[in-house]
Amino acid sequence: MTAPPPAAAPPDDDAGTGQDVSRLWRILAHVVTPTTFIAAIMVYFGAVRTNTMYARLGVDQSMLGLSLQDYALRSVTLAAEPLILVLVAALVAPPAHAWLTRSAERHPAFAKWAVRVMAVLGAAGAALGIGSLAGWRLMPPYASLGEWRSLPPYAGVAGWRPLPAYAMPLCLGLGVFLLVYCSSLRRRLDPRHAPAATDQLVRRTLCMALLLFLLLWAITLFAQSRGEREANRTLAGMRRLPSTVVYAARRLNLEGPGITETALPDPAAMYRFRYTGLRLLINSNQRYFLLPACYMSDPSARAIALPADDSLRLEFGLFRVPSDCPR
Image (tube, rainbow, N blue to C red; front, side, top):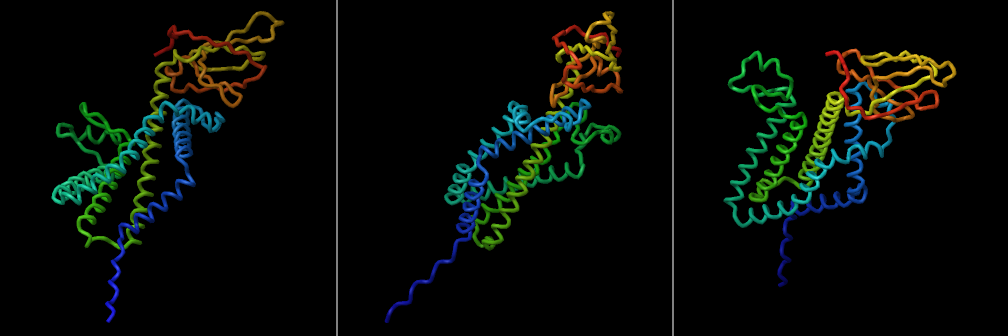
């Protein structure tokens, strides 16, 4: 009598899911190359940072007419730090995962302890991110209730260093990642808790989408904070901007703190009026964007846009002598 064939081994859900994820990753790698991804992040970072900076200075981004190349070049020095961190994490993650997997198989007791620690850290990070998203704030024990109520979001009290706004999505993303990763290690230690392959693929896809969204959110908030910081540095150091003298054939009626109009005596001169007390902010989109030299002394001061054509003559210099601005 012929022996019956051996029963087929049950399919490995983790293996099938891993193949599905690998296949999806290969498809995305063909559609979005690493170079394209880095270029897109740099352009997006530069656009958010530049638009935030010039909006703080009173210039709408639609008037600048900057190109994608301009945005990318303006983000090279500032986007390098987050990009390096993301790329280092992408390089370290696979060998770290392989090491943890081998350790879980060889030392189950250590793996269970590590899972518990990561679960606690993940829950704490997720709770901190969700609390920050809901507007909750931690009050130091020595802060009064009135001081706590007057705090802006993410601020600290009495020497506490405030958390930046982009820390909230980072904490939430890191917490969610640790919780999902702990669940994966727990299923490896105890296969009885493993879900179906389809459910596992859906969960991993949703988790990946959430992490990418939180990463984009963190990059946006980080770029906005850098734009606001650069605008504040520009306002605090107006002397570092090029001093500008404008010559015009007709009266321009430029007004602002520190601006001086002078009518030139020569009636045959091509330019009859001179304006001093201006600082060049940027030359873009066939326009000169200028700020009054005493921009910070008057809350009603406005940025000035002049056409870059033959109707005007502009002279630039680096005069670091402080202006006599009212305080």
